[in-house]
Length: 416
Image (cartoon, rainbow, N blue to C red; front, side, top):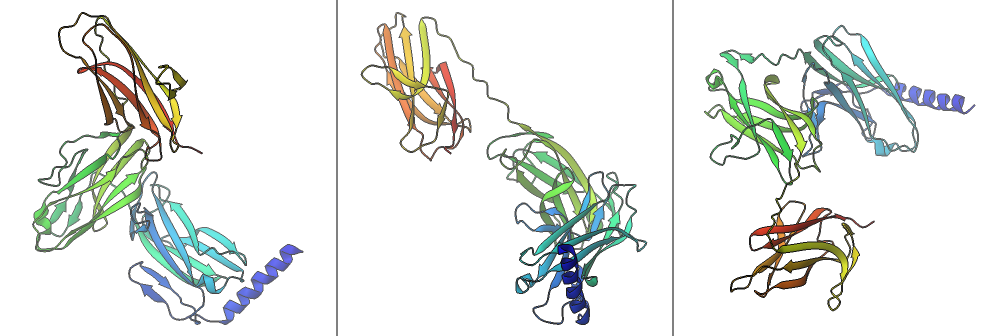
């Protein structure tokens, strides 16, 4: 019974919409879409954006009109319902229809939006693997209660990584150089490679150099640099040279921080006028653990422990652990037990305790000057574990003069 009532509601709404004709189609130059606007100013209108993915920096779709076939490539559609807020209590039925170059529908998706549902955007996607999709002109049409309300067109072309874009004055291709450092004198990276470690605040820099630049002399050059994860762009930078420019180099960069990227395979693709002219693959790998060599000095026995409390009078450590929690007024103590039985010359030896953060950089150090005679000492130093600290792996290193004699690491975790 509920299903029958629901279908009657949808049918009555469809008849209502069918009675109200829409205006002549309007072309959106920026999106490349065609919409058939509602006669009423508050009526439901639809916009269709076809894109390759989301620009990570802006959060907006990377909209294009020409797509290339690829093993993992897809065409994404973002369908926005304009004026949805004026119709909160209405049921709606929409169909998203993908149409091939022969005019045949090969994939249709129906979506019902019930009263009270505030959905204002729908998404759809198709794969464009070679052999599965023919090249040519495709369409995406959107129907509201079976009435055509919007459509968008796109071209699908074959992907050939070895071919250059051919323009009226000859072929134009590009070279891509990847590196972890930026050369301030030009846009080319200071070093080159294809495997990069995911270090804190690190980046991968791409330097792009056009070949046969003279083929486009006197013309405006437009294009894009796409950074891709498994063929799906996550960041795009535009290329633009005016007709008066003689430049043939440009660049771009993305963060490789572990918080921003996952280890794996990535690529940089360079397009001119929607033609792929260059591509470079690279891999991101986890940062290698830094290996610090601990030296041995004959006659010196040293050991350090980490604890949450330390008795200054008793010289005893309490709450010994290798992990601690970020908390206001909390501290971690490093307690060094040192025995030096050597016969030393005049002068006071120096002990240095150094705290190292997750970025492998020292952020605090404490020096101790000891007597020159035989030494048996318990030394301590501490740091705050307040909210100014970030979770991660820390360590306390102990140096005798310039020699590292012992080290103790610990994990700092966020409070829950």
